[in-house]
Image (tube, rainbow, N blue to C red; front, top):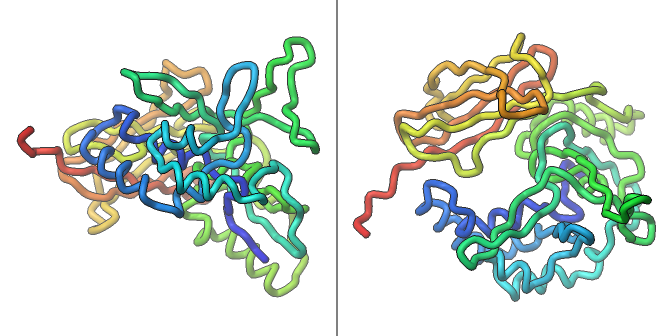
Length: 305
């Protein structure tokens, strides 16, 4: 069995989708409709993280159906999903013959922090995870007793421990979750497994890897959309382009520059669309496979309130 970016332990991003109505993002009307649809989807609730993901400061909790309902999901769908016995452990039993291909190097929401805004529960995504031992106990700082935090990265949707859970010898590839199934290195790995050739371990090079982050649901025409590139340190040799995913029409040229407000060396660019459309953002470096993300630019809400 070959799995590609499979979230065996779930994805914290599923909670953020259920919580869109509370997140005060824009455009508000699109966020509201997406959240209302998400709350009816059993499949999305099946992606709820089974591992400890709610950061309480001195402890880390697993999600409960009550938590999911508070964040905007459906209590019954969450109860059915989270009650599955196989989802109660961070270390599932290894599957015989399992070959896991895991996307790495991308900024990925791994855990959640809860805040209150106007009486509503807002889930904030955090780019770090908590390690546990073989008995499922949290690893803590020996001096303070605070749970130890560690950025495990992932494929932009599924954090690394969730995709590699239960696999004895996972292979790693640098890429985004949505494009892994058509990634050249993934296809070569799948071909090698199917033809029973011995395959290597890590497919991508060591060291910093480029990552791409775009707004979750985009924005509206005329409003700049922030695009963030991580893992490069300098814009030399990198190019960021935008095209319509529906017509192929190119967008405006983009210029990458260092973000003075960040300490991780991230580069930023802004894309301003003139018409509503689905756009494909592509990052090329010349030394890594291209990374792509889709971003939606929707029409503004013109309904009379």
